Length: 103
Image (tube, rainbow, N blue to C red):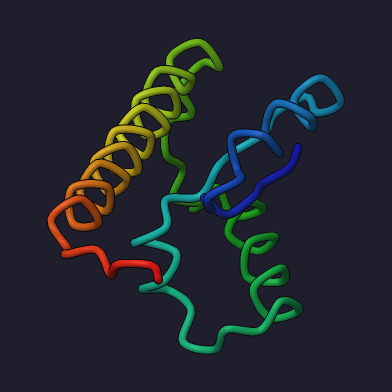
């Protein structure tokens, strides 16, 4: 049995650890932050272990890797669209500036 806090990389960590754990829980970030006033890894680990032992751990749902892949791809597509738009704006700005004559 194990537990991890939900973070940016918790999906990847979950996928790596899941085959080795009988049960693996992912903690709901807002509820865990409300429970912990001190942000210290040792204190947080103790708190997570105690909550898990007492069956009070605030779990959240972990989607399958296929479901988590779609938002990742869409975020990357959005990043590419923003970058392409910036490049076009830079190109248009350079085209509109008067050129200096070479002598």
